[in-house]
Image (cartoon, rainbow, N blue to C red):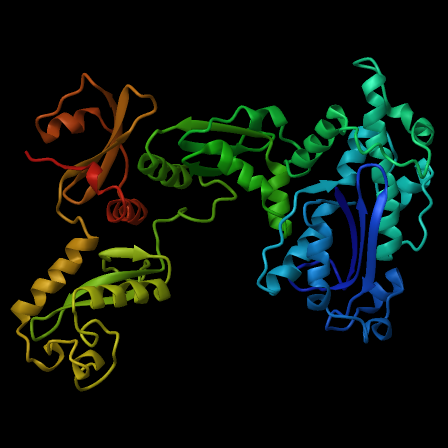
Length: 494
């Protein structure tokens, strides 16, 4: 089943504009079987140029339902359907935004009749809905009104399906662009489909291919994506000139890249990025940790145009260690950038995250809120008043005793001064990956097979490919060690 949908809106930006009219035609692959259309109150004024284009005025929508009043109807009508529209990204992105504002994740497979028309009816002077319908003989009434445009799109879609059906009887390699003139003879209007007849495999395959290709970057051959490995590594998006414009990593490169292309394009920058992708290459790493570290290195080295994160070794916030005049070790959160010369114990994404992280450590290790800068007061902290703090804030607990727990907290998040290797999966079953940390600094990684043996630190130094340590690599390694990978860590001495 297919839901052919058209919207009229107050403008072209889903993030700031709203829907003024919606029309839905349900198509079963043979004919229209259901329909629905209504004006919607957008909750804001309709710009004059939009009224001039669509004919929809503020008075017309003043008593119309708001989107939340028809949302359930839209969900129920389109459930199990492929979302079809002429320039599908526009209509789909607006509906997704309206549902997102209601706290609902609206998700459907999509099919663009612009893209399908380009494939099945090549050589047309224009693929805009109005001009395409005029050129191929589809009557389009009420142009720029949702019901009129959606009905014309439904007729167009039916013809496109019939073209693919007719192509089953045409020898391979024959030009089928002329078949549109004969489409109406293929299936007389009103003919009921045979309920016992399964859909044509070729027609189903053509539509499924169109659904996938509708989300693909236009310059990227489908075969490139089909050949991607379902394995861990880093991948590169290239433009037509071969330049790397984006670097990413994943434990399953094929699935991650499919996710890239399944994301709705909602901004000019995102559309520009997607339309620039002409090729994809990759390097397998086996280990997720190596993939993360290598991705970070490549972003800094190549500075791809569409990688915003990790171009510089700067995190906005971090956790710091200081000692006050009384000898108490004080953990604190604060900015972590070039203006702050201190090196944080751990760098975090923002000060809100750093504050939450510190609250967690205070609770877990029974630290003092006041000494950690989480409770501003001249007297005792709040936890002392409810008997959770042992009194370091008022001098009742000695610095020596209190600092032991601070050290425990630091040990849980820091590997400073430690030397060890992290052993993980390799690129094949016959090898392992090794990440070397020496005196708390990331030194690099290597791949070794079963013939490798190491008795001292120099043995690991000899095999690794050296890389630069920075705040990003420190954060990556800390996160790795804090989670499920503790068993991979092996101490190195000498």
